[in-house]
Amino acid sequence: MSQHDFPFRPSLIPADSVVEHRYIHVVGTKVFIDDRPAEESWTSHFLGMHGDVACWGIDVPHGKDPGYGAETDLYSLFARVSNTEWAVAGRAVQLIEWARTHRFCGRCGEPTELAHNERAFRCPACSLMQFPRLSPAIITLVTRGKGDDQQALLARGTNFPMPLYSCLAGFVEPGENLEQAVAREVEEEVGIVVNNVEYVASQPWPFPNSLMLGFRATYVSGDIVCDTTEIADANWYSRDDLPMIPGSISIARRLIDDWLLQR
Image (tube, rainbow, N blue to C red):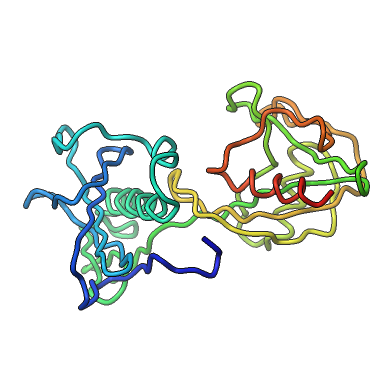
């Protein structure tokens, strides 16, 4: 699926052409996709349309068993369903987590209610609008050298399963643009100065509410000095000597694969 295809269209209102419904039951942080609707007392969230299919997220109350079979987490689900189904399941998890954590107003503490004409919770007492949270994060493949001798900088986070290595990543801070975030994160995490920051692609990352923005950057100066609170190890790797890298669920793999094809 290309980035310009829209097989799934987020919406607030089901289309008139609905002929089928699909339900993503969210049990804690796990999901189960089924064609059976929620129990009457459970909360449903309309997610959007996949063709003529209306997609719904169902918030299964704590301690309840939907009785449809084994649930799975989003990581495991990726290998079992299409990219579109995974994106819809991720959207369900994100919106339900947002609903669970915004039942009360952050300004005055009063119970909130769903807005009628947009996806938001509104406080009836002070009119504060609370929209779904998205946390932008950059992820960057840094390279140095040219041609067949070019190397990529890969790192192993302190929370990574050994011996997995990936691209450098971090959240965008208030008041900075994306290019500044790339340069800052790389220098903070491994002590390397970069330039020529170029955007590549993006990916929703519902763990729990990130939007990953993928970049390439070029080495300028510095020796690798890891921030050991976040980075356990980092090194330069050639195309013929890569460590274990992430699977296709992560945009990190897209960045690395694109680089491998450039030789």
